[in-house]
Image 1 (cartoon, one colour):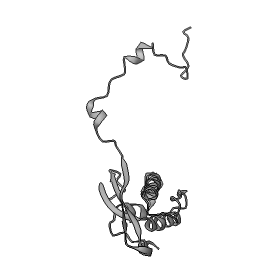
Image 2: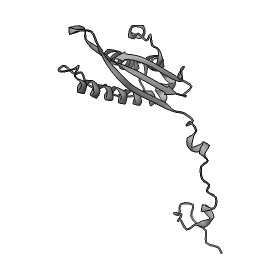
Image 3: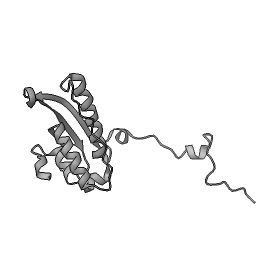
Image 4: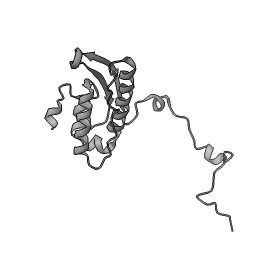
Length: 158
């Protein structure tokens, strides 16, 4: 009787029968666009106004081929208070998804380059997590609008 090999047995690299069935990737496979991709960058922070009316907004660049998004490439500007409203709307809209926190409020030196850069990084992390969530991509009405509509207004969603 021949010995049977368990389907859970570890394979070894000297198993030449398996190596003969492998092939190298083609250049097209290596360099073609992935099936689904979503790239979100937050960049180019700009501070506006004077005194108590000062605020910083950030450019959000979104590149995707995910069908839920209306545009393949978009650029919009949002300020921190827009992110706060967006997060609140997402929490109300998506009770099955745990929405991550935003970077904390800053009360001293909030317009210094270091504080602005730290906040930019935190906002980018937040958006990457939220926009990358499959339930939000398919079930959220506010997600695509926030990322892609230049005339997005938090008051339309209250």
